[in-house]
Image (cartoon, rainbow, N blue to C red; front, side, top):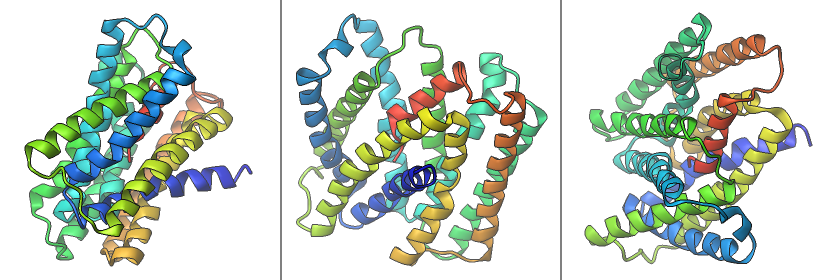
Length: 313
């Protein structure tokens, strides 16, 4: 069980990128996201009314408004950039690797923004991770995927949006129950993506069975299964191990994408993924040494809580 849970988390989380690739082959990103979040929002709203009303007690307009903003940054903006990048031709593995350096960026920026100590090892790991992501992106671009050079900046924008949400959550004075934050974020995404799809004339879904399979997969596995496993592994093993597992998403997604869609997976891709994994191990070891090997608590734990609530893919 100790090994199976992390493996299941990595596979279910990575499947979100594969589902995005499958869905955007037959419909625009806005359409896929609209039909992913409409049923999710309805289910979560019903659950809130029937089972979790107590978690909403004492919620003020200010607290809920802050959660809406965090949801826009951490879920709506983030997921749209991920899906749109994949639709533009960026491989799912490259997108996953760019997404995977988010904990490094957040950890490095915690020093100047939150006045937390950031070691030289963590800074080195950050730049090493960025270098690995850049290497994979250039390998992807040179493989003739059809994506324009600027398309590789799109997932970087989403990653930075996720980082901004992390720090906004860090500065929140009131903790919000996961059931509340997830419901608010999904409802916000449902409204925004429906408006975007209707506004661009792409609200009508295609009849392609692969589209509906992708919608079901993203809603059930990439949201509920991965989300539940995230919290379970976080509770059992701590945030440091969870963040390390996040760096396994990129190689798993890259292999999966190459097998399922013929995405590029040459020597430069392997090297870049290896560099990204090395960066994660450096930051993991440095963080474990500073915390004496204990699970991280405090502000870093709150950042992990926010990442779980957002559920990236």
